[in-house]
Length: 260
Image (cartoon, rainbow, N blue to C red; front, side, top):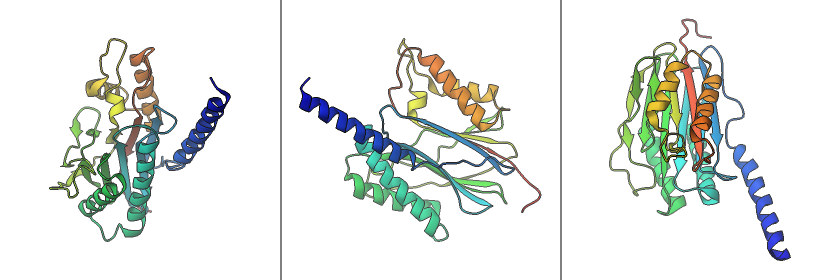
């Protein structure tokens, strides 16, 4: 290898390390674990930077927004699009949540993705708005893997919504759904790198294994549940590598009679 090539390689890797650190700052530094919600998350990138994203945004003591997203493709271009998407999402939730419904917000984000990606990439996206007072979870699923809502025995897939963001200039239809949350319900959101992970025989992990892990470990904290899921992923893949970015966001909902 030429000395100039080596220097370029070292410089590129330093830039990627800086980009990786910058990307980590986009994710929430702390997730709540209290008497309203218990939230945990984990993210493994296939390269130093990636195109998956999750967030849990507190509007006030009663209202929360949670989301997970996945940019088509990998690497720096996916990470750049996701950082732009994250900034637009947080700005709208923080400063405009009182004026936008979830459907309005998804339309706005679709326009943002189109402007940024110019048809080169798209984003699958799940967003939920939860109100602790009425225990309602409103959500839109924009072409994303179906999050799992469960009481430990029954499993509901949150599949209502629209196509992925950036696929069309205008989204033809958006269906928002609303579910009532029961005390101790758990919501597990994930990106496709989790269920499409392959073992040495080329078999995929798939959702049925994920359902079984959640059911068998439903009593655990969300942090411990996420640890168990990734432990099972590591065990399943054996010597194989993660071939895609993999993100996981888990939330248990509590119900308080006393509001403070």
